[in-house]
Image: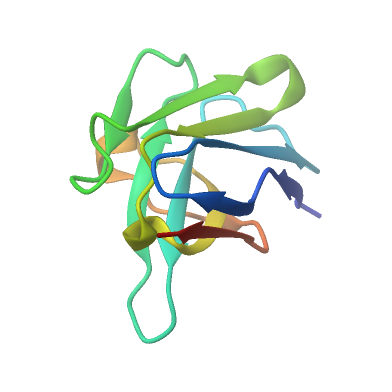
Length: 121
C-alpha cells in the first residue's frame, strides 16, 4: 500500500516562503515522476510542478513559474516544493502525487492526502 507523509504547510504572509515535503513509501518508485497539485474550494485541481526520476526534467504550471522550485531525494523517496514570493492566490490544499508519465505530461497515479497552505495579505 502506497503511503505519503506530507508536511510543511501552514500560514504565511504574502511575500513569504514555505517548503513542502512529501515522503512516499510502499512500492518501488524508480522511474516515476513526482509532483504537486493544488486545489481550492469550488475550483478544479491545478497542476503546480513535477520532476522526473533523474531530477533533470522539471515542469511548472504557469501561475508558479519563477517563484516555485521542485526537487527530490530518491534515497528517501521524497519530493520537495519550495514556494517563494507567495501571494493570497497561492492559498490552497497542496497534494503530492506520483505518476509514470514524464513531468510535462504528469498525471498523478498515487496521491497524498494534502497539506493546507494559507497566505495572508
